[in-house]
Amino acid sequence: MEFKHYLQELDKNLEKGSERTHYPALKNLIEGAMLGINANIEETGNQAGIPDFKVRKNNNLLGYIEAKKN
Figure 1 (cartoon, rainbow, N blue to C red):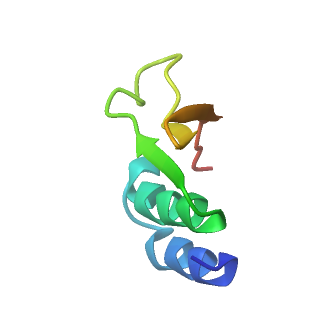
Figure 2 (figure 1 turned 45 degrees about the horizontal axis):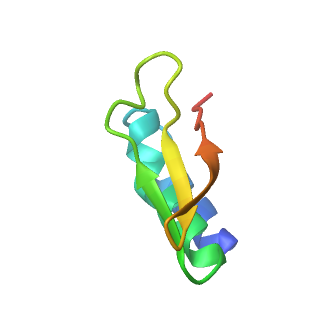
């Protein structure tokens, strides 16, 4: 996903929904950045101390992402 398209998706849903409303657009942006990247949305990510996404490439953990809606 191009960054411009990501911003359009955010704009479309900005006033409605929760932080999780924007997860699919962020997932698509992350996975579109590089071949083989997999961003898994953590179902328990809304609990304190648990990140929203785990990012992997070829089953190797690259890192975690915590998303915030202001």
